Image: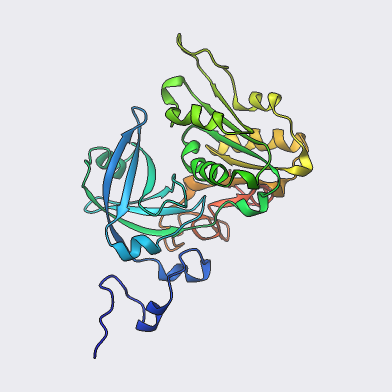
Length: 302
């Protein structure tokens, strides 16, 4: 009797006997397939950003699809192209993934016009991830600037869902103005969790804003840092890395305990187009997550 392979599967029949391991870099070349997906919900965050909840349509692959905080997918809008987007949801969520998308190009502009039920394609997940297990038993600094809160949201979920594995956690978020803040509906929830301290700062205040105004580095003045017992994750514009990481270095945190995401350099996801390369390093394959020591040794990385 002939055994029929799953219609989306392009591997050998013997491979169906074991689940696909999406997180092994050695198998990156085998995850360039596109999964048919649909947009099941859209949440408007600001005038420029929307959060898309995307579900892989096939039950089999939806159950097997897995990712780690810091990884990204290639999102395809048929007829317009595809873009790399960091996954902004909890890695324990098997129903759908969340992608925060800023309207800034032709593909993203069309996506912002999409409605629930629109069909898209998903490739991945790709890239390295934040080493959350290494941070168990330690204090964690989670620092984001602007759109950087989108990729930082995945490690925030990881910390919340595994709260007993971490000590003190500080979430620091800076943005241009109150109207640019992302996910502000979750701030109160994060602040209510034991030993999690959330601080938000804006560069330019407003009449209704009662919080601090200034640069994100000033929030570190109110954080007690134990250099040998603290890890840091920093997401945001590259210029922010320089100032934040230099401040953390001055506070004594070793460079190999700081992790940044160079998500803005990602392109095809597989290192084929060479647009993400920094010397011999390919951000799509070797990143986007790097420790700060590695970034400092990558010319023109930031």
